[in-house]
Image (cartoon, rainbow, N blue to C red):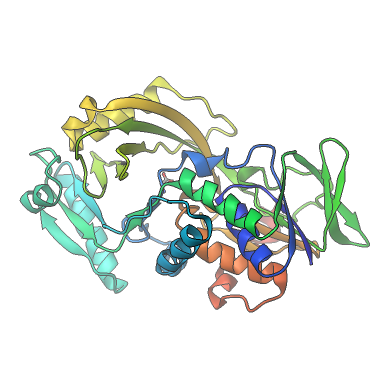
Amino acid sequence: MEIVIVGAGVIGLATAWRAAAGGAAVTLVDPSPMSGASSVAAGMLAPVGELTYGEEPLLRLGLASRDRYGAFVAELEELTGLDTGYRTDGLVQVAFDADDLRYLDDLRRFQESLGLPAEALTGRECRRAEPMLAPGVRGGLLAPRDGSIDPRRLGTALLAAAERFGARLVRRRAARIVVDGGAATGVGLDDGTVIRADRVLLAAGPWSADLEGLPPGTVPPVRPVKGQVIRLRTRVPFLRRTVRGLVKGSPVYLVPRADGEVVIGATQEELGFDTRVTAGGLWELLRDARELVPGVTELEFVEVTAGLRPGSPDNAPVMGPTALPGLIAGTGHFRNGILLTPVSADILSAMLLDGPVPEIAGLFSPDRFSAEVQA
Ligand code: GLY
């Protein structure tokens, strides 16, 4: 089985690893692996902490992926000898004012209605859990099984694992899908080279439909949703676990790493393919982060980046065969690409290799969108 994967973010890389380990000859095509949303993401593994009303199928997929994460990381780290910064120390969600607390109370009831353990914390309990929290924090919720990972370390390890099983990386842009006899039979690169394949996986985030030769409506519309993210560094103990908060209705999160990095995210902006970092975006993040964790202003500044999340019409991933035989979609992971990496790799590699596909994949098929909404 010859497989071409367009896009070497975490979804493409993890699927390449699994498909190559399953015996396929895999070629990854990307001019700059891990240069999109995967390298900007903070790496929260928070299906409970990031739960949103109306997205129960996504919650189920997120829980399935979180349950796979421990074994996935253990296998990856053992294979490559590389650390991924994986943590399972929970997430505390905190409220800045009385309205924010009311929202968290509603969220706790919603979590409980779904059978999720939700521990309500008073303001004092929040500060006992996280001493750097501001004295005025009203209360919160603890999601004890949520966690985080360093997406950049994860990407490095996934590429090493894929290469260990013989996957080949071609650092060029995929320009077109090659179609013969009504089926995808390869990918044409920007230098005119053609790579033939039995199966093609589109895992290029919001650029997944950006290829010549795709029949109209083949790939559901995936839009770019910009997120600006700040990276800081501390040399002294700071946060014990991920803190996610609401400040006058505005969400912000701080993700600490064992190496001292603290990632603050993220804005959510619908501005097309715009990756400019703006003064307003940074100000909002720092303003809200400081309200919750005043000491954040003492940390060393490291980096600011903006990435484009791939958002589908229902905010859930698009994974499965498209209307073009031989072409499989693996995109639309929106705010959850890092969390959904293990389960997506299992689903997509099974589809590519004709193996048994986890049943939950049926909820995320590209054909769930009607013809009217397809590009
Ligand atoms: N899941 C975090 C974000 O997309 O900002």
